[in-house]
Length: 260
Image 1 (cartoon, rainbow, N blue to C red):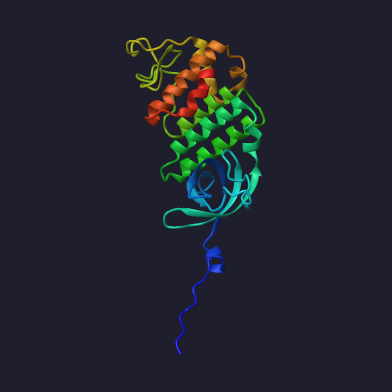
Image 2: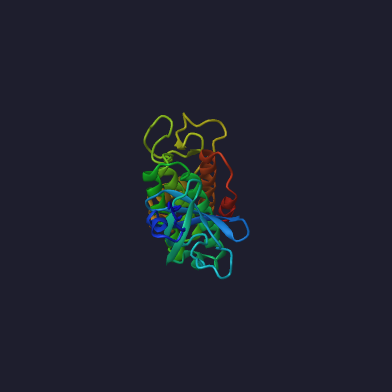
């Protein structure tokens, strides 16, 4: 007598053998159905992943707080045709818990993860891996209060844009290439421009503002720490405009930069 093959359950060895492990920073979550969430994660080796966490919104969920924004989490996932499924998690660094009690740090972290989500939507795994390392370092610096949140955010944004191929120029004219200190800041042209290349109504920046922008891009925190509030405001304003120019959209989380 022929027997119908018994279907393997999702808890079988075959189901688990399809799984893979990675770790990453949680960028965003979306509600799904009554108790689930879609989790957007930037991983170290798989780029940006969107995965379903079943039952995560229940108070008895096994995931706990491991899938909250900013958390650095180790994950086990099972690939699916439409969206992967998270089956196990473990907290590596509880950045989410460390940042939520400080308004400025939380605002800066929110802008960082929103930017990272926008910059890692394609399938460039190498670029995403670099973006992951930069984001992890920036979130960790926020958590340990390494510098002011607004300065950490501004530096992160400049360096994230550089990885994406949009590095601004602060040591030569971004249009004609003439080296030296120039004082006109052009968002469309990608940095400072000389007197001859500056379009009408291009904003003027003092030497100190240009030096601050260069220091933020290079991570020269000694120079950054000496900046005056007026210099900080102009630098952060330029970076916010420059980011949104290249992303071609307005990021709501960047309102934190108005405090610069």
